[in-house]
Length: 286
Image 1 (cartoon, rainbow, N blue to C red):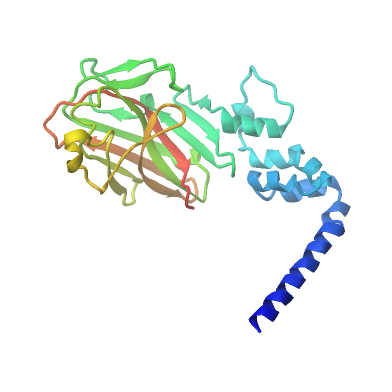
Image 2: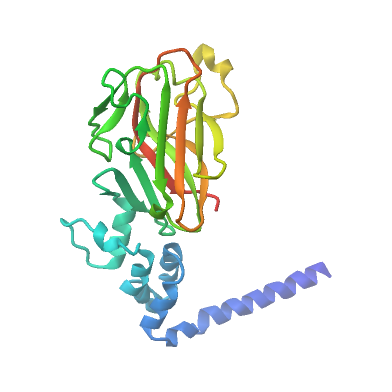
């Protein structure tokens, strides 16, 4: 009985496939602008898939009607004056692949390619660093690989504390975000690299998520001291390192965000850390 049922199912699927292959799509009879309008209510990923359905869809997907819907409302202010774009599609992918500086160069903005969600990085100039204005503890350097003009370099501190804040209007509504600190280390980041650092992420007025991170992590003879509840950093494609600090949900773009990275328990002096900034990206699991 099971074999007969499976055989009947396969026969139905074969007939359905024949219909799909031989019959024209109902959408082929719609005006191209109408198809473009329908596709604009999907996502950039879905639009790229739709382009492979037929020549009609391929042409409809190229329309500015589609890609203008995927661009942020203020996209005209994000276009570099030195560049000209032949279509909204070209502009969309440029904003995905080439982050632009906003807010007088203190923030970096780009779009996530698959869904058009907003991504933001705050420069280290945009955060509050304890003793950050004291040249004997921190200095501001130019790093060729950085998106920003100046980057914070830790020279020597005992009290390590960095706090950041941003309004959720910079992010996409109805989206869960992961927050990362983006950095480089020198000489293993002595006094800080292999000890747990407290990280907190949340919306002001609400309970923040708390976790522990390593900037490097124990190695060699200290490897047996590594704690499983502490997150190790990962190497990025741009040559920097990142450690995830936590997550938050941006419901309606009406809140303020609070982020903290603190280590004040260890009596050792700390050095060898270069901080590019704090990055907000849509979480992989929504």
